[in-house]
Length: 381
Image (cartoon, rainbow, N blue to C red; front, side, top):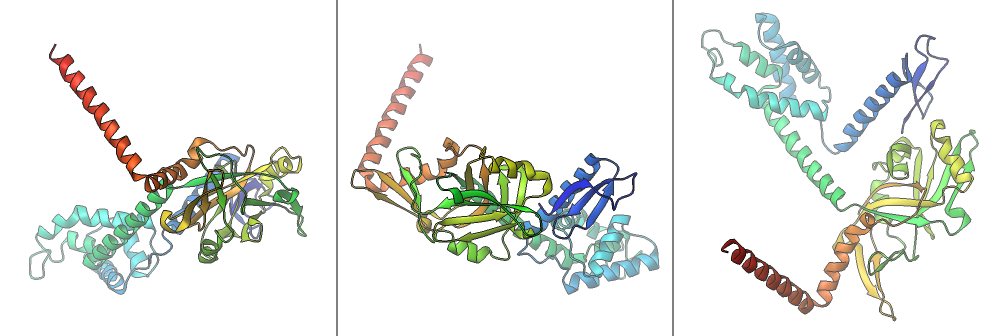
């Protein structure tokens, strides 16, 4: 988390609670209560997350949108009609070429969808009495037809990203690592007086616990492609116990560093002072595990092999998405953590023995047919 809530001498006595930026110690705001400071903290994180969510999209108004908004403002000054205070403020932003937020893009689309009917009113077209009508002036304040096309395009792009993100979350997997060596989870002091948590979220070539008929191993290099692609752009968070409310650091703020070495996926996170309890738990060895969340492409990211004694091993070859890492209190394997892997395992089994799958489907069909026949017979009794 890039910000921390704490009491600060830089704030007045009446508002002692500050939201402090971790990277440079600057105060973002002073508040009378800790609750008010936390409210600002939440707002800052929501704004930051929203901006990162669509970082590949361009939210700067195109030239046509800027010109239309400027025309709307000129008409508004000349005729004194059209548009609300919100519309005027929006036009100033658009005419000034200021980036809009994703939420504003959605509001623009909603506005144009609602006000299409204004084009049928008198004074919309040149030469008509009352031209330019209030509706036309308002339409231009929001960017006119160029603004509508632009907003529609942004919303389509955002919706596509949302669908991709939702699909990724459906395929999200978590893996848990119980510490075997001393260097796999430890704390290290830094020259600036802070303490970092250093650990391995994954170790290469180490077999997992049984995941339901198969075990798993992560191959060396599994994270290379995703780390290279995400460097300088991605936002991976460090969480304690997978809890989104206990953020220890993140790559976008520089408080989390990720690397892949000969042993595995290594993370170094410098938590805020408010999370020193986690540091102490690790120092006392009350916490002795790590976890990471990931997705992979079944076609390129995994394979299965069988050992000489007939055991099945799922090999993770290439991770396509990395979402969070961090220490965990109990490095156990809940069933939900391997649900996606289980689907892959069953699909692989079906590929190995398709005749058995056909027999199982036929057997289930016979059971359903028999059940339906009995239900029909009971209804006719």
